[in-house]
Amino acid sequence: MAEAKSFIRASHDRVRVLSSLSDAETNTKLKQVVKPNSFPKTLKKVGLLLMLSPDPLTDIPGVVLLGAWQVMKKKDPASVESVFDETRTIIEEFRLLR
Image (tube, rainbow, N blue to C red):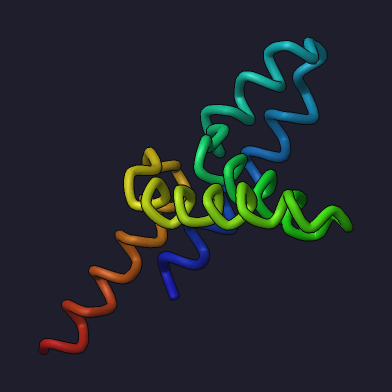
């Protein structure tokens, strides 16, 4: 429960800071720190677009890109959100061990 309250408080603080920033470039860079761009997600999006296109020849590269996404997503850099989620999972597992 305390973790959820802390996360909510941090989220409110982040919204307050973002709303007070007037520089669009600074705002964009702050968003990239919180949730960085991910090459595997780009592979997934392009692969799905290729598979959904009506041309049957694009299905093969689409499948290859989706396969590359599966391999690359394990090497995706940690974001603030993923670190928070993993920490919450570990704390919950420790509680269950007691």
